[in-house]
Length: 120
Image (cartoon, rainbow, N blue to C red; front, side):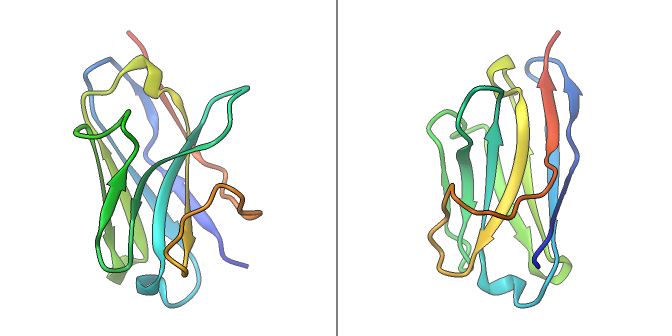
């Protein structure tokens, strides 16, 4: 079973930055679209950033211009650079992957996520 290991979260002041990492097990990493998601208690998980196997990126409006998704196929790792963080970015961040390039919200397999807290 494919596994995801997210890391890099923490406590940061508003306006600060964090860089999240997501390591994916399994083969053919370069063929997958990768997505970063976040979830807060009582709310549905949302897709905040995605990158296709060809490097095309897309972002939720709430993070556009502040977050950057990237990938290192040699390391089977995806990254999320988060700048100008706001308290409303506080959430548990997860990653997932889809070989069809159509990132979904309904995967059955998720990692433990990494907690991001933006607070003064």
